[in-house]
Length: 344
Ligand SMILES: C[S@@+](CC[C@H](N)C(=O)[O-])C[C@H]1O[C@@H](n2cnc3c(N)ncnc32)[C@H](O)[C@@H]1O
Image 1 (cartoon, rainbow, N blue to C red):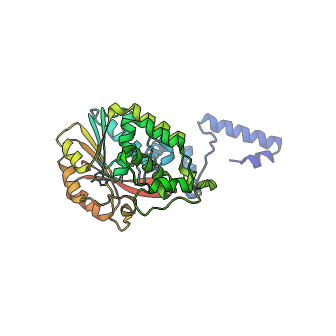
Image 2: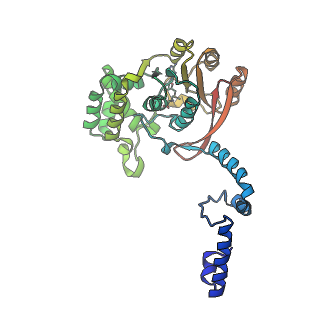
């Protein structure tokens, strides 16, 4: 087929011939379609080109498209953000998968349990979309817990402090160095820490953002209005969300025999040589073997998420759990692989 430039250089008879040719193709159901192609995919598109003209190829393309949908990395930016945290290791990108898994159940879960809640984005999304009757979040970290407790009990004190705060390197340091008293003070300190330290890391040792994005320095992640909006939205859902400041294992045990509970397990993880969990969280060590054993006993459904490592795969095999490898794109646009572990 001639290109646009070729067509413009045709004499009138050539042009008519080309039009007749295009019309004939159109009658056969073949038409021109423009697509945007990444350079990595271009050679394969070229190989496929001639197959696009045959209707018999359609079922194969349909199957191919379905498979591509499944491997397409989920972009964090595509999911609406409800959490006031920018949580290191946060699972915003996993929300669509969890939604799909819950909707595939034949019964809406009575309890959605997130025992290692962190920023709790999955639980919040489940609550917002009413995918379960009630959401239970649990977290051991005192600072993170204070934020959840402040939001679910008396959010306006926190909102006022956020809105009134004049953020500079000095004012941030002053707040972060205070030896806090009470939930509200600790909650504000944690929200601030999460916004002004590199990567949102709350664990000791994280440093303050200096240059930040677009030359905005320490304020580059400080969005008071957005934070307050999210906090108030969570408060509106307070009747459907419970927060437990405590050990996630105990929370799992408490719901272990309830067959209408759905567990979302995203524990801190330090295996696989990366040891990232150590740097990211104050509470970074748990007994993974015991966690797997515990999950093998729960009556409800569950999803566990882990870095892809031999030791985790081995544990999953030992307990005959199903392992699915899923790609995700992190905030630096790198594609990473994660394991989703479910009941088989
Ligand atoms: C990978 S993060 C969870 C991130 C969360 N899924 C999100 O999207 O924001 C793991 C969390 O488990 C918490 N944690 C560690 N040990 C715990 C325990 N025994 N009980 C409850 N929480 C724990 C850590 O403080 C950390 O916040």
